[in-house]
Image 1 (cartoon, rainbow, N blue to C red):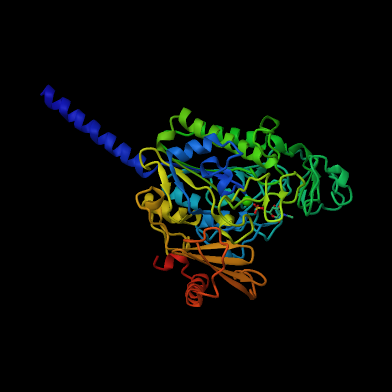
Image 2 (cartoon, helix red, strand yellow):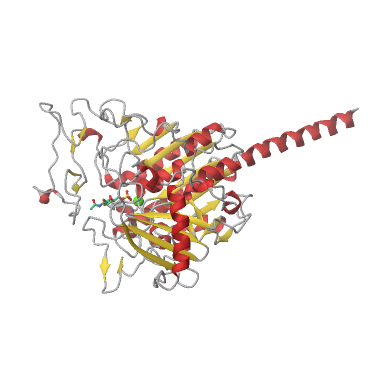
Amino acid sequence: MHMILKSFSWALLTLICAIASLTAAERPNVVIIYGDDVGYADVGAYGSKLIPTPNIDKLASEGLMFTDGHCSAATCTPSRFSMLTGIHGFRHGVRVLAPNAPSKITPEMFTLPQLFKKAGYDTAVVGKWHLGLGDGKTPVDWNGAVKPGPLEVGFDYCFLLPSTNDRVPCVYLENHHVVGLDSKDPLFVGQKPEGVECTIYPDGKMNPAAMTYYKSSHGHNNSVINGIGRIGKQFGGKSALWDDETMADVFVEKTKEYLRSRKADSPFFLFFSSQDIHVPRTPHPRFQGKSKLSYRGDAMVQLDWAAGEILQTLEKEGLADNTLVIFSSDNGPVYDDGYEDGTTVRTSTQETDRGHDGSGPFRGGKYQIYEGGTRVPFIVKWPGHIQPGKSAAMVSQIDFIASFASLLDIKLNADQAIDSRNVMPALLGKSDQGHTYMVEEANRALALRHGPWKYVQRFAKRGPGGNAGGLGGRELYHLGSDQGEQKNVAAANEKQVGAMNAILKQLVQGKRGLRGFAD
Ligand code: NG6
Ligand code: CA
C-alpha cells in the first residue's frame, strides 16, 4: 500500500511538473530591449570595435544572432507602428510624428500587447513611445488624463518619454499622467492659451546662446530646455522636466520596479524602449569617455549598461530561465542628426564617427532604403529553447505578432496584423529559413527583398501610403554577390525588375497584406 501511494504521488508530481513546464514553455515572459537608431555594427558582436558592449555581446553569445534581421522601416514611428500592429506603416501614411501628433494606433487595430493579454500576460512599456497620443479630435490635455495612448492599445502599465528626446514635451508620462506636474505651472505643447501664466522657455532661433549643452545644427531650435534646443514648443511644466543625463537611470529603475513586482506564475510582456542612441545624445557623466568615440559611442555604452541591468534583474528575480529576450533597434545608424555633438567625421567618400561605421558592411543608414536603414542587431535568447548561434534567416520585427500568436496558440483573424507572418521556427532556430520575400520602407522609397535580389522603388513625392506617389528611379541589387549595394544592375536585368515590381505592387495594393500571399 505504502509503495503504491509512493509511486502514485511520484506520478502525480511528474504530471504536475509536466503541466507546469508545458505552461512555462508555452508562455514564456517576453522582453524586447529596443535601441533607438542603433546600427547593425554598433554592437560588438556585430563588428563594433570602438564601443564596448559586453552585456549585449553576452546576450548574443547565449542566444541566436540574426545577420539578416530587420525593423520594418528606416525611421522610428513606422518601425514601431509595424512591430506593434503587424501592419506596414505605408498603408496608414505613418511617418515620423510631430510632438503633438495623435495616436497612430487606432482602436480597431490589433496589437502585440493585446495578443499577449489574450494569452493571460501582464503588459508594460517603459521608454520612448513616439506613436502619438490622443484621438486627434480633441487636443491632448497634458494637465489632465493624457489618452488614448499605450493603455488604450493593450499595455497595462506605461512609463514614457512621450515623443522623442529631441522633441517636446520634455516630461515623463506614467500611465495617463505627467509625472511631477505642478498645477500652478500648467503644461502646453504647440501653443499656449492666451492669458494663462506658465514658464516660457527660450526660443532657440531668437536666442541661440541658450543652447548651452550643444548647439543645434539644423531643425532643433524651438524651445530650449535643459540647454538643448528641441523640436516643437513647450510652455510650462517646469517642475516635471526630465533630466537628460539621468534618463537611462530612470527607465532602468522603472523597469526594475516592474520586474520585481512580477509573480513567477503569471507571464509578462515588457517593451523596454530606450532613447539611446538617438539625438540629443546625453550619456550620464559616468559613461562619458567610455567608448573610443564621442557622445554617440558613449550613449551606446549606456544602452549596453541598461540592457545588462535588465538581464541581471531577470536573473536575480528568478525570471531569466523562462524569459525570451529580444534585442533590436528601430532603424539604422545616423551620426550628425541635428546637434553639433561632434559625432560626424566626413571624408570625401564616407561619413562615420571617427572611423566607426554603425552599418558595418551595409550601405546607408537611418532614413535610407539601403540595407543599413533596416538591417539591425537582432538577437533572440530563450534558455533551453533556443540553441545559441547565428542565423542568416531573413526575419522582421513586423512578424512578432504572427510569430507569438503561433507560439501562444492564438488565431489571428485575416484582417488583423495583415503584414505579419509566422517566422517562429526561424526565431527559435528550429529552421534556417526566414522569408523568401520582405518589404523594407524608407522615406519616399520601398524595397522588395526576394531571394538574393533587392529591388528599390523610389517615389517622387510621398510613398504609396500618401497621395500621388509619382514614380522615381528603379534600382536592383544582387545582395548575394553585392551585399554593400554598390552596383545597380536594373538595366541589365529588366525581366527581374519587372517581376519584382509586379510583386511589390501587389503587396502594396493588396488589401490582404503580406500574410495574404504565399511565402
Ligand atoms: C527628424 C529629426 C531627427 C529625428 C528624426 C526622428 C530634424 C532636422 N531631424 O526629422 O533629429 O528626430 O526626425 O528620428 O528635425 S526617429 O528615430 O524618431 O525616427
Ligand atoms: Ca529611431
